[in-house]
Amino acid sequence: MMHADNKLPPFREPGVPVIARLNGEGLKTLYLKEVRRFFKVQLQTIWAPAMTTLLFLIIFAVALGRNNTLILGVPYADFLGPGLIVMGMIQNSFANTSSSILVAKVQGSIIDVLMPPLSAGELMLAWVGGALTRAWLVGFAVWTAMALAPGVDVPIRDPLLVFYFGTMGSVLLALLGILTGVWSDKFDHAAAVTNFVIQPLTLLSGTFYVIDRVNPLMATLSHANPFFYVIDGFRSGFIGNSDGLLLQGALVLALVNAVLWVVCYKVLKSGWKLRA
Image 1 (cartoon, rainbow, N blue to C red):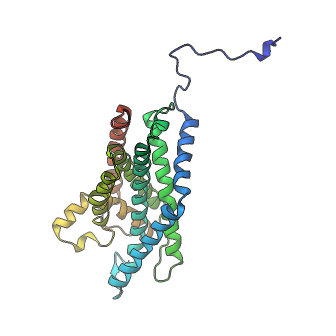
Image 2 (cartoon, rainbow, N blue to C red):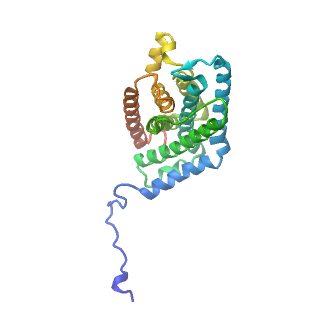
Image 3 (tube, one colour):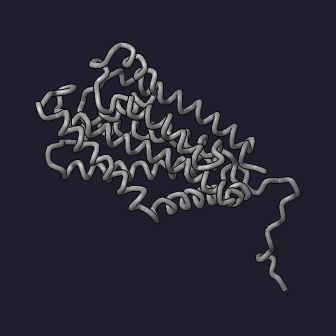
């Protein structure tokens, strides 16, 4: 006979949710899935971007830094290094979310993500969390390589600026990656967004130049580019000088990310291009 202390827990009434607020176990599982997905091929997802970024540094530092010109009070290689670090971070953040969703759609495994009791907000937290993890791993790999390389000095002067702008920039691109993955029906669509939107905005964000040395039209376009504030704020945490207003940049990124978060949430909640 069953003792009174070993009573089975009562069943929930039909329609009463078992997970009332946050599905922490499901969120953790999806996050770990995202991390393991890119970490299993870390040679391609972490070390290859680090090598590409270092090649950018070598080429531009040799081509443009021979005359020891100071930019924002530092040698060109020191000016260029932090921008390249965060450029690699945000590009890989975008690649992580966009490829994860698109591959799942093409392979038909997206149903394995949509069927569990995970809300749209929980899906976003897991995807963005995975992208942030990859972005900071890439950033740390590039920074370590630059710290050991001769001819470039990348000491961190303000960790708070580095953390804030690096994180906000990676979240920005992760959210854009979610929208791209949901919208894309094939790999050509995602590649088009990367080649015609992400790459131009990244390269024209002030990574390789300062705004006061370009024509007024280019300067206006750069200030309208949210990627500029990511690069400038992150670089300021290394060199101690900025090319723009840091507070303005911080507020712009917070506003853009808030808008993108709401848009992504509504898109995922509607099931657009995800549910048959």
